[in-house]
Figure 1 (cartoon, helix red, strand yellow):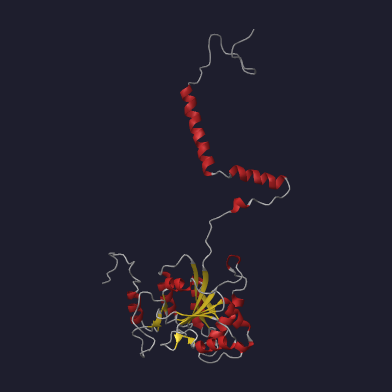
Figure 2 (cartoon, rainbow, N blue to C red):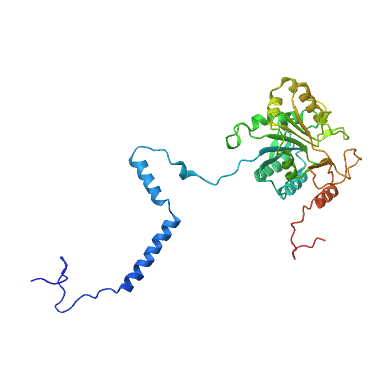
Length: 334
């Protein structure tokens, strides 16, 4: 005896009865969502099958180098140049450092230039310095403490320049052979417009380069004398030379900006020289009155002798530093 629809291993259905067949609409309700889920998964995780395959190959067969296509991340364009700005200051000047951090953090930066700012001073000598400066380093990590006794013209700038190759050894950026293209020395009474500085450096030589505000104040010839200590820049190859030159090491006492020029002159260095006048100058209200001062100009790169809060306020107001301030019921600034 045979039965229609008999399945081996199951009892035959009762005579005269048959199993109901599912309606096509029910099948569709089940299959369509499953298909959609599968498509969504493949769209969101297209590499999963490749990953599973690579794991199988790695564990079950000989080791194979991973495909480079699997490791391509966001491409960051290489900057036109890398600049280290060293602001020479003293350990006790906490408020000045906080002001400078604030004003520079709010400035727009050119995407085509990489600029690092560090505060530079000599060994700590007080109990409060060791604690408060340590807090600054933990929070900002923007301080270089040199192995020297705090001074202005007794070798501090030399120690700054000569220490950099060792300090940044092994920190080359993106496989370059040097961590920076340029190094700047400036002071904590100087305000820089970083965007304008970056534009002015974009087409300058990367080798044997000396850039700044040439003295005397009336001169426009960068080969005439020397660059003012308000802010000058050397290319990295000159920094390396300073760190190894015996002649330089034996001549470190005296006005630091003039000494730097003497090193370069006697070492037959800095064949590429540039002055940034009139975009660098002393503050219009600087006291005592300076022959190197003039009124603010829009294309400013550097303002020097910003000595007090009123000087800073007038400087920042001219350069629209607070334009981004939004009206709010929480404060009233007129």
